[in-house]
Length: 412
Image (cartoon, rainbow, N blue to C red; front, side):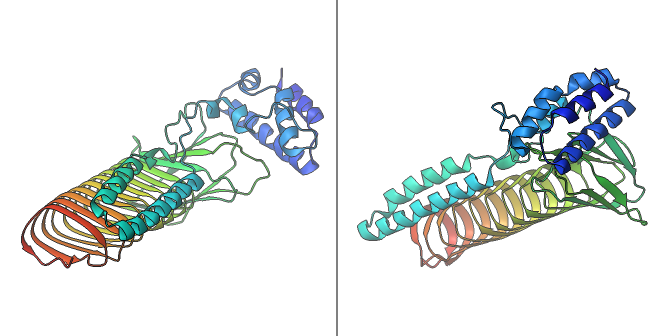
């Protein structure tokens, strides 16, 4: 089947509004043009796509008046590249539901403790529940394990060592973005799935700011769209600004900064002098980071921090499930809101933990000077090795065990 035959048959089968029909035909016309320009024949493109009958059945079911009994993922599932993708996304509604339910259980447990005075037993049960919740791994929330073979590659040359990339998607379903180090010396490469996605890429006159935008479209992508950005070795200071789910991995830089909206963020295997992480609300996973200074600020949502080696760490985290484990830092200042908190296997010199209400577990610490303050709730502290233990946990229901400190000024 030729392109003309394919498009003609598709047009005749579509029983949708004119605006939707024109948009669908435009997208498939664009796909043919791009694929052929990349060396594919029209017949090869037809084989990649679903048949016009199947496409129309889906479109009519999703957009038209005739419901299809065989509704499939719209448009993205029509393209072979998207079929190779691996979707591993944490639903934010499910995450928030789990957190809310767990916090409710904790609240009731606190009342039980107050009534029955069995702090030790309740703390142990809650600690076990918290540990189970911490096994949830949000590192796959962006779904960046995707095969981009055959996708369209768009390149931008850069010649300075500082770069800001702004990524904007004007559609309801945001594109998922992964960023990693590329092999090219001075080319930023953008690869997207499905490659029928229309985008605009511009760079400012100074060559330091790239804007990648996806305009509003009437096409309803059922699955999440994917974008992979590879950054050249010439870049030493990188800033990513987006409201889209973002994953950054395998990067070696001098400075890395992220500004993410109400979405998700995953950072893995990053070596940098300064790491500045900003997220309005949503899950964060930060793992395997080697840096001199790291700052993480978020509004609310689950946070997982693992295997961090840094001279200085500043954490300003809102409400949510917080897990901090396997961290080595000379100086650490953590300000954390209400929710489930686990701080475990930490080594350092001067650490200050300001904690909100909720269930908190602090254990297996080797800190020279440790200060812990808490606004209330439950707190378990055990296996603490310190020269000086300071702070105020007098308003909490507490369990302390195996505390080894030369000087204890902790108000209990």
